[in-house]
Image 1: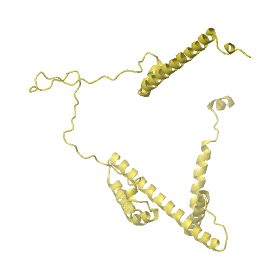
Image 2: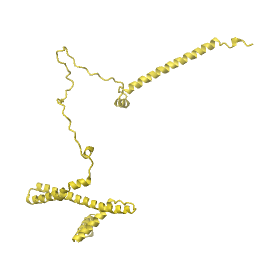
Image 3: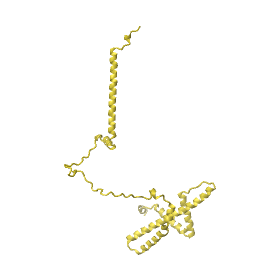
Image 4: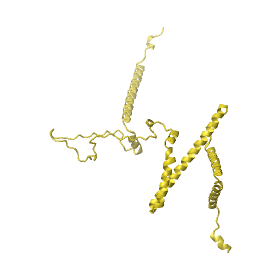
Length: 255
């Protein structure tokens, strides 16, 4: 028979077990207090602005958890007296007496209310500018240039005439490009009906076709020789810039 006294724990063992429980409780209390401290720090940091954090990182002297200053309200000694306001606070120069409606500026190029731009329709509607108005204005300016003697006015008229020439030239080139594209599209549609794949023209190919058309027009009008001579002189002048010149010292040494 075994004795029951062997199963019973001794006094020293009981004390040891109790001490372990106390240590566990103390550790739990410490961890809980640490968690509370962390939550408080997180709450404080949540209200801090990014600018204050940057200042605190840069020099370390800036106080992060700074309380905002409360604005002091004006005082009055008596309810019948007006309120006293500090003279240190600057007063705004402009006061909004009447709330006027704001002017809303709309750009028709970027407004969906104005619709989309139809390039072909625009050219058809305003084609009279390039066919009638600008050439007529050019003739008037030329007549004014003959009559005026003021050099400043003459220079202004010349600038206007050159601007009109540029506008007319750009319009003619755009019109030529459009005609070339229209012809090419017709050919490609017919080819697509036969089962061929469509071919899209590049800008370089459009320029080549423009030169071919211009060559044909000059040949028919009889101005091809003068045009080629003019181009040759222009290219020769360009090449002449890059030609090396003899130095003056070399000529002196030869003599």
